Length: 250
Ligand code: ADP
Image (cartoon, rainbow, N blue to C red):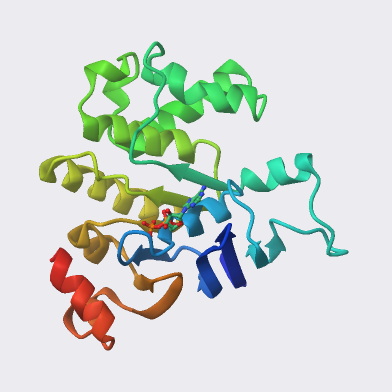
């Protein structure tokens, strides 16, 4: 069974067709990175998986279950949709931590309110994920006392604490300098190894893409033009469009 599967997904904003008949399948525990020119539809794929957008046509399944329709093919109710949304966790370019809350308070908020966990339970799990991202010593720090890389690692822990089946990473290193990018890259690799979570990544950082991914998927104008291992895509791309994109970004 696929961890996530997009079947003939199209998305338009008005007359603008952003995704066209897209098919994409991701295996459980696979780390897949979407690359391609700005505006080619990569972030829209993540937003659809997170049900922040609805496709114009097509279906999206997470571990075999549609996040859009019930078994009878009817659109999900808003409460069913909210439940489906929890199957994916998303981390954004801007870390979006609450500045007036400590690291621990940021982490326990969703488990307490969404999962209705006890304080003890939520704090225990917060410490476990803080350890995973290597920041257990920062438990009582405020976001402003942390580097950008550390804040992003906390944002990753905050997404993981809800135990998503799919982790969606949208340009998570774009606001970071190269050294901090390395640090976040290492954490994504540790997390993927330790949790076996399936990861879907959008990034403009080709080094990040190359090092972290099992597979690279190349987008152009709302379609997938090529996909394969990082070695194949970066060393021996088949498509002229991939070659010209890589020439611009490498
Ligand atoms: P990428 O991540 O590859 O840069 P996006 O998925 O962010 O591309 O966007 C694809 C296209 O969809 C862009 O042209 C963008 O302007 C358009 N788009 C995205 N979201 C909206 C929206 N809410 N309303 C209108 N157009 C949008």
